[in-house]
Image 1: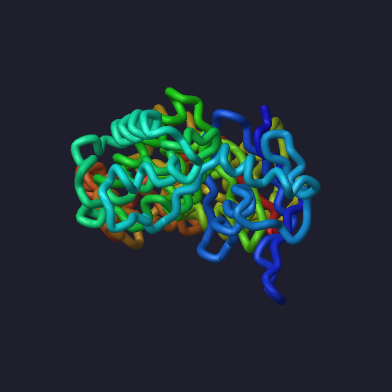
Image 2: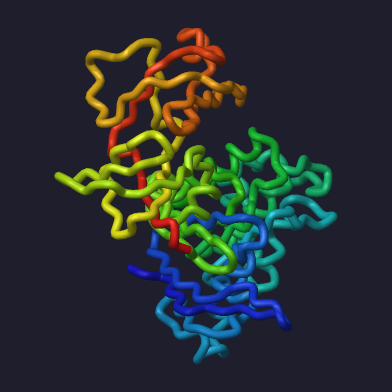
Length: 361
């Protein structure tokens, strides 16, 4: 069931248009990740969906309510949602009082407050700090206090705006585990904006990519990262190989593209003749000699021209008639004794060669 439906959303601050033509739907019980460059409008969109501020135009339905037509219902709707911001907000009081604050404003009874606070702190693993002063805790622990203050109100939708941007890897992993558990065990709907592409892939069921103030593509993590809809999206999601080319044939479900001095076979159909060949570095395989067993449609000789360490991986650039970057584990590169000037063979299946039109957005 669709729990949030946004259509043609716009947001303007003075002469600055921050959002335009935003279409987005959120299913009940899913984790939706919002990714995109800084300034693409992720945080603004979250604030609009959470009814913190109104859109300048468009339609927005939350829990089946037309929020544009029924502004009087915003408070009731907001009480069914919760937002966690990038920087934890804690008050100079005990952890217990920090978490209980929202419930006291809502007039919840003392016994219910006590029960709910203890349950929320248990959910984030902070029960032992219940009497501690929140400002004495680490940044990661303060973020969990802030999260428990949201959870204590039992939100049906949880909005997370870059919740781990300032946290160490251990605290990040803890927050991610809590969010995943809330979604899996309680069926909580989660919208998370993140600059961490790996985090988006780990947590989200679907990902929406925001580019220049609009949702440029939405789909499964695999579709977004392996089948980006444009060159801009491919570049943002970290595709190492974006090569201009021209289609020279289409036959039997396969498309052949001339890319510089190399012809590359793709399983992607394309209505345009001028395309970008999009290949993730991890989908390219290197071999010391020509493999006799390889079934990949693309198999050709190459020479190593550069090696860049990205521990525990390496980027190996090869010249095979066009430059290709291969992402491989450093140990694998060591085992193959990869070095600049080395003659190698490159293989890649047609299904990992994605094509996008050059004249696209």
